[in-house]
Image 1 (cartoon, rainbow, N blue to C red):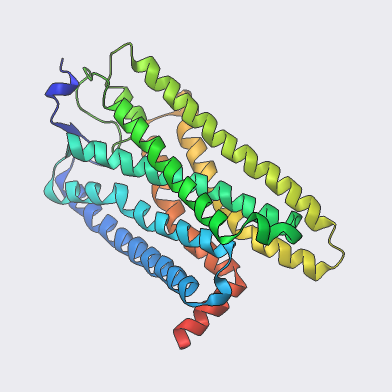
Image 2: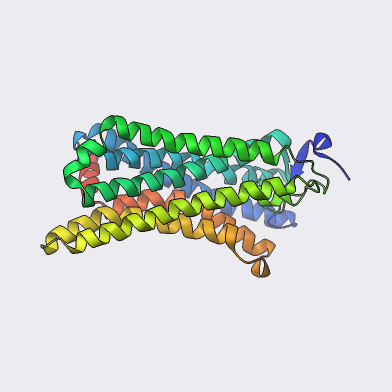
Length: 309
């Protein structure tokens, strides 16, 4: 038995115990990682540059999309980089500080992205349901405050969760049943009565995410009602076109996140948990820029103008 003061490192879940397969996985994940990271880096950088250079895109919607692109750039390397290094060096270890840092940044970026997606739903609601008050309700100062609030909520949530998780005495060893440091596997290492405190923190965070989801659903119910009242088909199509990319990103992020944290324990297994963790930690930040760039004709036109000079 050990406690948290004597733990200097954690053991992450390996994909395989065979050295040859570890090297195979390393090169496979390296190719996938480079393709994903470089592709997402290029796509997000292109979106950021296009929005910054084209004054026609200096609107609240694209300002929030700019913030989302910055979050996605940070999310991609949070989990995969350490696993790939372990593949290469044939090890499972991650330092105590490294594990805490990985958990903090992962939860910070995840919480900030959910908060920002909620703000973006409010932006679409005001633009479609209250267009005459759009400039008043979403002025430049208000947009900056809303974006800062989303980042601050993510930072504060991650700071409290990380500090609370690593303040628990750990006496069930140091083997984390996941390929990166995450709160539920670390909670399994605790045998303290304060474990209930962390459960309450987890329940509170879940309620906060559910609250964001409910706010987005209610906003889109109002949006769809307003769009259906638009007399012209072209106007309805244009209004829907501005909402579909955000709705697709929200569906992807919330569905993978909810399934990962709220799936029944009866279907839980290490292999399924591994696949689900890859889905909600790697797929959304990779797909988000593609969804927005492929579905937004105004952004496509600005990108083409930027590329062709």
